[in-house]
Image 1 (cartoon, rainbow, N blue to C red):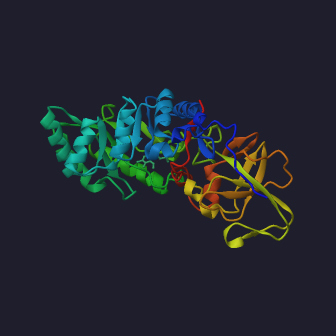
Image 2: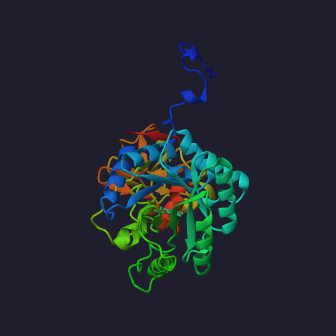
Image 3: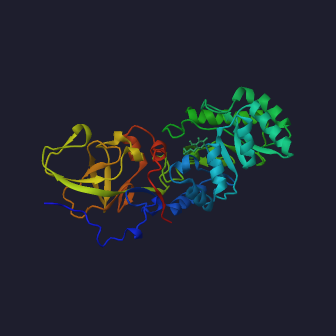
Amino acid sequence: MQIRETNQGFNFDQYPTFEKNIDPKQRAWIEVRGKSLEANVRQLRSKLSQGCQFMAVVKADGYGHDAKVVSEYAIKGGASQLGVATLKEGIKIRSFGVKKPILILGNLYTKKDLFISFKNDLMPTISSIRECLICNNIGKQHGLKFSIHLKVDTGMSRLGFECNKFVQQFEKIKSFENIFIEGIYSHLSSADEHNSLDHKSTTQIQRLRFLELLRQINFERNHKIKIHLANSAGMLLNKDFHFDMVRVGLSMYGYNPLANLDKNLSLKPALFLKVKVAFIRTIDQGVSVSYGGKFVSSRKTKLAVLSIGYADGVPRNLSGKINVIHNNKLYPQVGSITMDQMMVDITGSIEIKIGTTMVLLGSDGDKTISPIDWARESNTIPWEILCSFKNRLPRVQVD
Ligand SMILES: Cc1ncc(COP(=O)(O)O)c(C=O)c1O
């Protein structure tokens, strides 16, 4: 028998082949819920001490959510500053028309980069006198003051002036006429650990070091210079960590890094990961599934093949450890997760068909799967899960 493909009756001109014509929900995608993010920012702000400002940390493309959407809704929720990691991220956010102050949390150290930062009205994080001098010279050349944040290292051993040298260095920095010190800050290394409230914890020691430093420089809280220390976990610990501003990432996206501490928070995930069923097959008992045959069916099994894999950012070491939701029911993922696809055991389901949408992260009915669950299973942290999603997954705004 000869099988012939026919184009009869199909108008190809109606379906141009440009990439933009591909439905973003054709395969797998990330739903970004701006309104949830906005509500999270409002809720978190309601917990801040009086006058404390909220910096929304939108680095790494808004923790993988889409920095444009995140910046817009964080500002709607009341964020007064934004934090990015790189010069490029800062410039990108400015290109969206964002007028709020933007702090670059990473280090810029060349004249050129600091000049570009100045030109784009981005505040660099400064950790040395050398960088201060460069900024001062840039300011002088333009007859302006270059706004910067000074960072001190209270225990992270990453960026920042050394605490014991800062007092002397600060005297010098104050004499630079073309610098405006917008903030002095430090970063907590372990605030999400369960013992953070213990007075001997790293977090409390960091806070005390920071306070001592402020005392030594005779710092008077006048709110011209913003003092900031807390990330999400630090902010949620208690108000002692709030100072003039908090820098919040994870909790704004809907995840509480201290779930056992503040039970009154009802944050909503701003990211849903969804996927289409691309194929369905039924296998007999004793049949292996996927690379390495790590899963062998113990009964006749109906499989859905989902169009998502580790090339989209789903960690391969989650193979066989996660569930997928459809219509308020959980279905186990089976066999090794492959580069572009994964299999799910849907035995017993008659409603799941080719083209059905399933939820990998987010909620459906009363079932919820969070990046915190994935992180636990794959021995990492939710931050890494969120930042691993690749551009192959279109970001679709739902609000
Ligand atoms: C300097 C700094 N501040 C604040 C944050 C936000 O942290 P979180 O996502 O825990 O709120 C980060 C994130 O890594 C950071 O590097």
